[in-house]
Amino acid sequence: MFFLMIRKFQDKIIFILSAILFVAVCYKSAVTSFTHDESITYLHYVKMDYASIVAYNEPYTNNHILNTILMKIAATLFGAQEWALRIPNLIALLVYLFFAYKLVKKIIPTFYLPGFILLLANPYLIDFFGLARGYGLSISCMIMCIYYFLCAIESSKWQDILLFNLAAMLAIYSNFALIDFYVAVLVIYNVFLLNSYISSGKRFTVSVFFRKNAINISFAIATTLILWEPIRKISGPHMLDFGGKSGLVANTISSLITSALYNISLPAIFVVCASWLLFTLIIITFLFWIVQYMKQGARMLIKYRYLISINSILLIIFSEMEIQHIVLGTDFFIERFALFLFPLFIIQVLLLLQLLIASKINIVGSILQTVLVICLVVNTLFNMNLSYYRDWKYDIDTKKVMLIMKRHYLNHPHNAQVTLGVYWYFEPSTNFYKDTWALSWLQPVERRDLTVKDNYYYSYRNELLNVDAPMSRTLYYSEQTSAYLVYNQ
Image 1: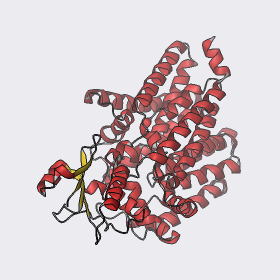
Image 2: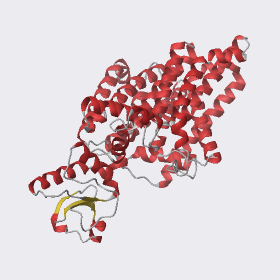
Image 3: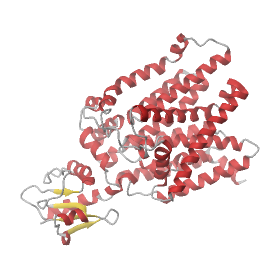
Image 4: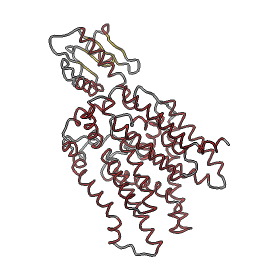
């Protein structure tokens, strides 16, 4: 009776959960300090003209093209404030919520609430919808792409093909890592296209291939033309060496698990076992549908089209990562660079659970799904916060520190400009507030060692002791980061 009631009201429950999450992320984006990477984007790229942003005139992967352009537009419309610069990703959250709902309702038409919850139950993922970075944008566009891609392999409507290509292109412009995803989607689309011709007894000729792929080819060419220069410029030495070097499971999958755990530390053996379990599930799924293909033939591709699509996309992405690592020496994606894989893993697991629920051992599938939902929800609720972002927790008090220093300076004015010596972590965000608050009395903050001539210090105790900073003149101490703001006069 309880589950029947939930099924009856699951649309309303989804709406309420979405509204609560959206309000929480909006509030957090408005009150939290701007972070290190966000500040670099604003200071170095948002101020460029649009052509320079797209052309990657200052090559560095911090410039997530679509995010930078939208930040520039938001700054023009609303001013350079935290909430304004983060608006693009708040909108991306709405897109993610909408297409996560449509997607789970499509692949699990009866009881889709657990699937929707699982696609949200990751505090690390939620972080990026409240940050002015490209990751939230790329993942929301990817979910949109997956939805229309699944529609396209069923109907072959040009509108669906157009929309999944458009979504994929926007995802790539938000995060270059999604190139691997787009390639995988185009490959799987053509597998289903070929199967449809074989099943109907029609000839699949070269002319048919180009005619049926006209939209795909057009978008692929457009994406390549725009990305050619940026990719070429960041392909030099040490431009992409910020990932893992050990392997797919050891780096990519394990980092997704540890980042999803956020502030929870579990024994390393747990992470290792969970990583290999997830990888094994993907391989077993592949073997399952290969066996089914041998038994049922090409019609099996239609019966298990959703499972085969997601599983194949994951496997192709894995293969691309391995090939790129071997041939080009690129690192394996980790943490936020690999975050786009999380929804794919969840969809894969959901589809496997649905197979169990539809089988003779349906009770096992239901129990596993319930346990998974409870574990991920508890983890999310335990780690949710409204004051910092996991990867940039050290910036939790930067805005407060700059405000305290500003007030102190106004009460103790100097005839000349003052200098602020900082630990290098704090250089971009302190410069962001110097710029956006128009602190003309403060010299640009430099990424250098502290000096005895600095008027203020914002750093850690060991660094301060090296310059004999007067700790008795501490204006603020952060219990969260153990950093000090010290007045040196």
